[in-house]
Image 1 (cartoon, one colour):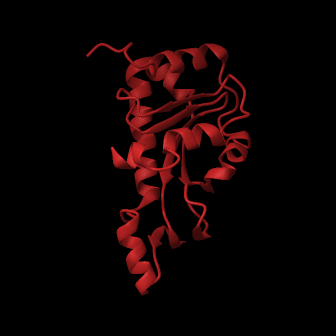
Image 2 (cartoon, one colour):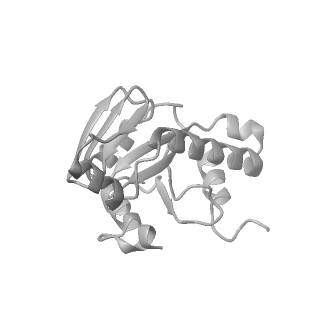
Length: 176
């Protein structure tokens, strides 16, 4: 609960605030129990899995690996934000889980037309991030809206497919 609701501002509210200005065709879902990821955005072009990371200090992404420099400060940062893990692998895994849910709830024919994209969002403005050709897009929270607007993969989803996606992700509409 601390990672979900303990930060200031809360991560779901910070993401919603950073997406302010997108039109009403975009639907943000945060912490919905029936969705296999914490934050999901349905856009007119794709379904975007948002993977927020509260990293602090210096973080290096090189060759598909995430690391911190070996220093006393780097050691402190490892304990302060819960460790790096591998955000690329975790974001891809979450996107695959969302694709599975879409196939399950909408059928293979409809799900084939939907592009699911992961994006890693660094939420701490004090992060010193060094990126080297990441497989999954990595943006700062302040740049999230611009990154979403630039999405062009998958073309345009029809309004009917968008409506079906939105209904599939509504909390409380699925039978247990």
